[in-house]
Amino acid sequence: MDYLAIIIITFIAGVIGTGLGGIIGAVLQRDSNKIISLLLSFAGGVMLAVVCFDLMVESLDASLTVFNNDNIISSIVVATSVATGYLIVWGLNYWIDKVTNKEISHIDQNHPQTADDLDELIHSDHYHHHKDSKHELFIAGLVMMFAIALHNLPEGMVIGSSYAEHSDDLINNLFHGSGFIMAIIIGLHNIPEGMAVSVPLISGGMKKSKAVLFTALSGLPTVIGAIFGYLLGGLGDLSLLLSLGAASGAMLYVIFGELLPEAILMWKSKLPALAAFIGILVGFILVLI
Image 1 (cartoon, rainbow, N blue to C red):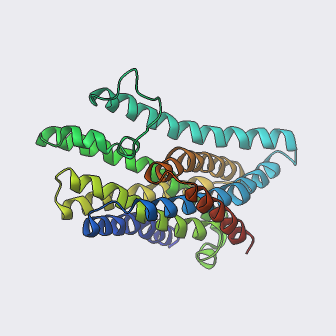
Image 2 (cartoon, rainbow, N blue to C red):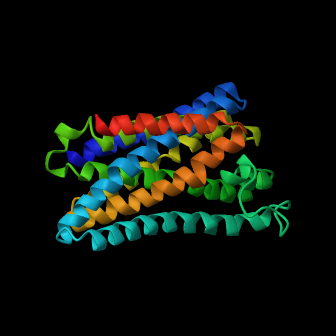
Image 3 (cartoon, rainbow, N blue to C red):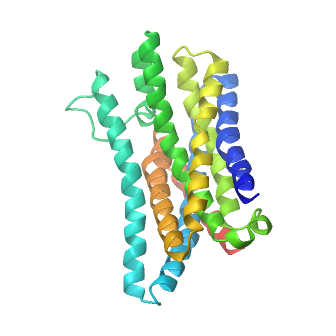
């Protein structure tokens, strides 16, 4: 019953949220960059607050229990687990860029070392490069889906690990606490992310129905990550601190390496920063409620 509840929650947040964004993108079929930018920034701010004020704190509490209230060892272990989670997702993204960027003609030794265009950040430029060949289009689609899945897998781990804190009475804690907050925010942020994915796919020649399905399926790793995070976090205090720490680090990469850069590339203004600031305050309040 616990796993079924988590699957339903994360399916709504991941697949339904991303798919809804894909539908909106297919209907509008235009860039609503300013709105998407503000929503992404706000969601990133809320996520940052939940990670720093709740998940990492819970990881530290579990670490103090394991290491007999030794603050130095506990803080080092938590910091290491957070760094590990961050580096894993960074490494996967680096590998994707290394494999795909060499096929894009304008990306050479003179190109900035970081994405300076939204299509580069979500890897849809790779899709456009291969859109005239059915075989290459299929390969490019798989690459892009994998890139999108990297966003959703750690997000699912955050939800699952958060719920693992209440594994002894999950049902009664299903609709409150950090797990439920993250599920809501991730679901909301997946809507503009789905829009950002479906618009370039449709512009590249993919049918609207196929683009929506493709976008929605990219949210499935959220469910997989949630199950893994819940399973790992429920094994004991040591596994809980490691899973919460690693999930926090992975989420921090998503926030600083994906969400906020996407928002800035969509709308080069100071308002996305303001939206992120408001999101942090809202997330702080939600954690304390």
